[in-house]
Length: 500
Ligand code: BES
Ligand code: MN
Ligand code: ZN
Image (cartoon, rainbow, N blue to C red):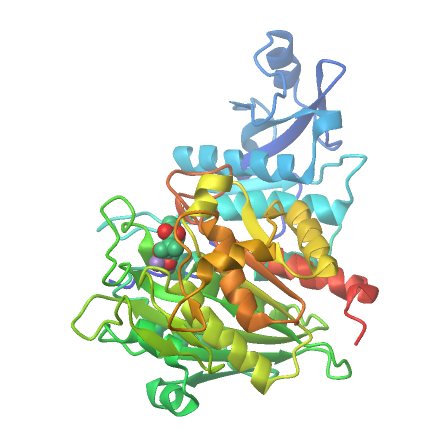
């Protein structure tokens, strides 16, 4: 069982005008003054006027009509509605092309031609990016069925006037999203700490260096919290480290830390039925960090990154770490375990202290499926953000808006810190139910200290119980596009970097 696929099933080729085309021509329309108006200029068909006069196509958002033209090179023509023109955003385009992909898949129409189309307010490159994102992200498949037909799209872009390179750059990011989804959707029995480490290592090349601390080395470094969480599992815990130096002249160094719990039973504080079933995706933060690291390298972004992925299985065994016991962290702070199901913050704490000690990092972003409470707060729509730095949190909000991987801030006032007080240790790992997304962040903050930092709780956005607009059911790969957009914004606006 190792059906993990990485490549978007897509080919980009050239269409030869006036030759017969065995496939479907996509014609986008929008509503202008209550009328369906074409957004392209090179094609006209009598059938379209007919359809419109019957009122059978109004160009509402994601509306689809199709016909078989009597004349000309095309086998099928499909009309695609984008809705009212003033309301069309990049997200509309992603959604509409996501719906289009689902429709085409249901028909098994895999040969697709999209001619250049325009929207006044949207730059050509951005339009193309949004349309490819919507289409390709929607085309992702994960299935362990005995018989499954892969969607083998041949997508042709006609006269978009963009370079091959810019299309390739879009594909780079989508591939990373697919990798992140594959890792989170894959069986927990397959995607173990050593599998994550092996996967990360396979990308180690050139200016991307991956190394792995195994259990022995974790013991030598005294990473007591990561070791504690991993104690009950047959698979040993690991700390995966990735280094990408894309801007050697700059002192700026961003740490990306991702929670890599490959299965979260809850430990001896066992999760009940109804909560445990999605916990193979408890390494979605790790997957996002790895995906972003790889994409940053492939895009040759001018940034410097340290990725740290603490990974362990939170399993039940006689060796499992125990509620009531106290463990010593890498930072030497002691932690009383009040709930073994609050394991994510433990492995993150050791990883955070480790990168802070070993590298001159200038800021830190962690991504983690950390709390069920964030699902109660934001559902599956938005990731929770807790930060000690306004520049960083503002930039992440902006990146979230641009990619529609939205994040929204929650406060981390010191009053909540009380809930983490322990009588016998420096801190306890769980503050109970009240404000639990926030107390989780305050736990991390003890280890982050003054480093500019943002914590993204992606427990709600990383895994969907049913398909979204262009996300398939299951793992979303959230975080990859967000982080890449953040890094691109930074590259474009260096003054957003910290002063030091
Ligand atoms: N992995 C879970 C959080 C989670 C819940 C992720 C639902 C995805 C979907 C995390 O390790 C956890 O168990 N958190 C506890 C913390 C509590 C014990 C303080 C929670 O939120 O219940
Ligand atoms: Mn847990
Ligand atoms: Zn967990």
